[in-house]
Amino acid sequence: MPMAASEIETLIRASLPDAQVTIEDLAGDGDHYACTVVSEAFRGRSRVQQHQLVYAALAGHMGGALHALAIQTNAP
Image 1 (tube, rainbow, N blue to C red):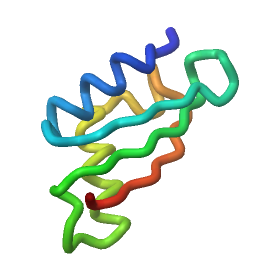
Image 2 (image 1 turned 90 degrees about the vertical axis):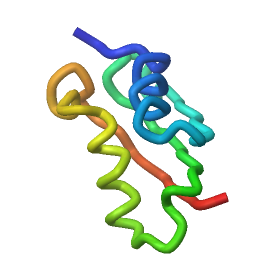
Image 3 (image 1 turned 120 degrees about the horizontal axis):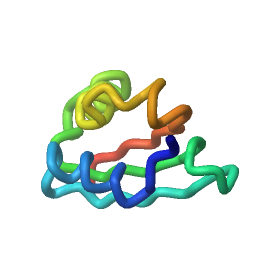
């Protein structure tokens, strides 16, 4: 079952409350998304660590309800 963009945003903001989240449905199927996440929590962390924070926020939905997510992260 596909995952709504709003659900992805809610999960990310629950873990990173200050995050500015932009999500784009790449294929129109609810399974392939690109997201940009800007959060102070990323400051001083490597790109890998930043992405790990986003994946942790998705609480195991990757590979299940959420098939593919391209992530871009930045500190403000």
